[in-house]
Amino acid sequence: MAISSNNVYIFVLLLFVLSEMQIIEGKDSLTCTFRSSPCFSKKIPCPDQCSQKLPSDPKAKVCFLDCNSRHCETQCKTRKPNCNGRGSACLDPRFVGADGTVFYFHGRRNEHFTLVSDANLQINARFIGLRPAGRTRDYTWIQALGILFDSHKFTIEATPASTWNDEIDHLKLSYNGKELAIPEGHLSTWQCPENQLRIERTSSKNSVTVTLPELAEIYVNVVPVTKEDSRIHNYQIPDDDCFAHLEVQFKFYGLSSKVEGVLGRTYQPDFQNPAKLGVAMPVVGGEDRYRTKSLDSADCGVCLFAPAEASVKNSLVEYGVLDCTGVANSGGNGIKQCVNSRTASNIFRRKEKKSNSTLSEAYTPTCHTHCPEERTYNLHIL
Image (cartoon, rainbow, N blue to C red; front, side, top):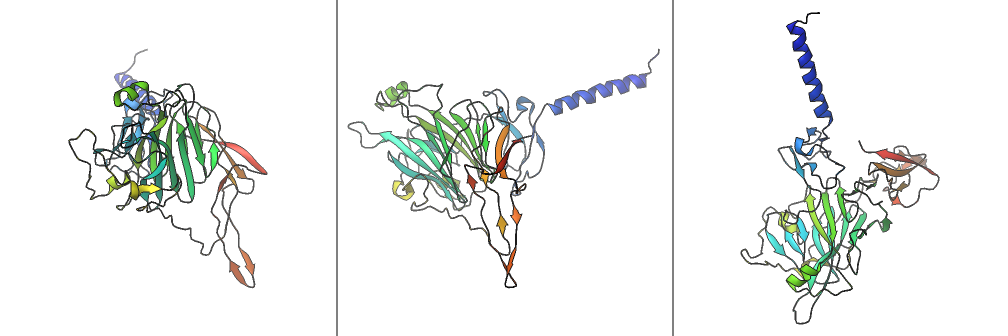
């Protein structure tokens, strides 16, 4: 049977369209969900070089969309802290400010200092360290972060270890004072349905990404001080402590122009970095300005954290108890959540009338460790 040239053309065109559809289907797309972003609600496809936002290979680069960028273009990046990138804090501690300038802030061992302080976000760090005989200052490293947002507290710590073992997880996390147990495994995930705080393992152990929607993304890695590091820098690390500590890198969204903190102030539009350029270790001070009493306090001399109280006018909100400690270990794609059987949408409104007047009260939803008389189900991230 003869085949006309038109039929051949249509057949080839159909094959081309189908192949393009398969390529598109194999790619993820990203979008920004907060309205202040120039990329709000735009669906941006991932590049061919990193077509997935959650690749199964922990060493593969991931698709990333900078929601602060006006270009709204996806790009490839690693999910571990880049210690030479802006917003990073690694080593003893070596910071890279928003302006790209490298500086050191030593602080003091066993004390807490504010890294970032803004009206709606506070990030503190606990420093550990030692002072060998003959030295005038401590060698220090960041052992823990305390993050305050709204009325919530989240902490992430490197647990002490006498010797380093890659097969042991050295991360300890807590939310509102309750310890979180996230199953080991790449992409294993915990998420709070109340505020979408999300913690995702980026390797089976010792690495996570913390996402605070519309506030920050934080890349965290736990590492030891190695014997080679100790030899090179003359740390004189003892045999019974490898000083496990955090490498971190921050990506912020919507900081105010008055933001403060050891790292935060570098995000001020008119900031002039006091670090001396051209020296091997440009050190900045400010211990007294940035010292806090604890990991979860905002009492430093320049701290700005003061979250606004919720409005209580003309409404009464009831809420179900939310379980933010449940985790589904299903390759990181399942998130276990409890909700009261009365609260399918987590919010109910009720008005009580007394003496011909309406009484209104407001309650802030709170995450708890138990869900009495509740049902459990899995949420799947698409």
